[in-house]
Length: 70
Length: 144
Image 1 (cartoon, chains in turn red, blue):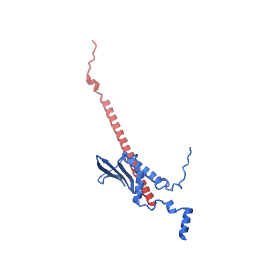
Image 2 (cartoon, each protein chain N blue to C red):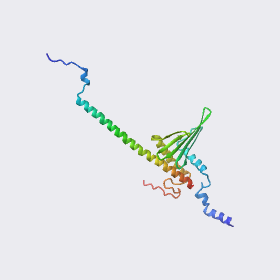
Image 3 (spheres, chains in turn yellow, blue):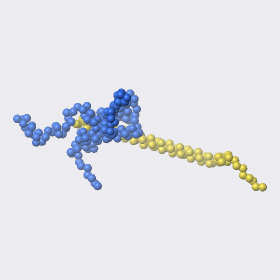
Image 4 (cartoon, chains in turn brown, red):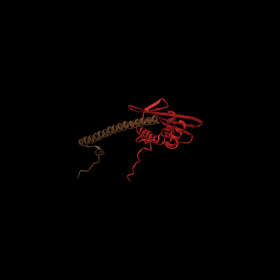
């Protein structure tokens, strides 16, 4: 008599220890990548804000100069 | 005799004071009002019943003022944008204040740029890029 297969739902979800480690590594790597991207965006955004502020200041000074010279 | 000479010269060469600096006699307040006539239209058509002012107050302050009537009651709001070392501070009605960023900061920068370029050309008759009078500014060469 051949050994019949018994369905066990736990087999569906249980993973070997090695695979779990790999998925944790993958999650950590993804999170690290996301953090790096966020920091890069913040840096880029700060640089842009400083440049925009400088642009407005320059325009304000130019405008005042125009008026004084009128 | 001197008066006749002056009149004759002005007929020949024109009145320098009037032609070169036509805005000379105006006060700073009057100039700001003329600038605001241009500034208020930068943001598109003003809805009926609304009054809008947008102008550069001094070398670090921009002002937005809006008045309107709603349910037979008049309302107004004044927003001041102050350029500080660490950013641009938005002060609403004198009390509520915060530093602006993102889209709002970009929009303000765009509005101030359009204001400067239009006011420079239309009111002060100067090229906004070179600062030279428009009739002395070099023509743009069309390479196409």
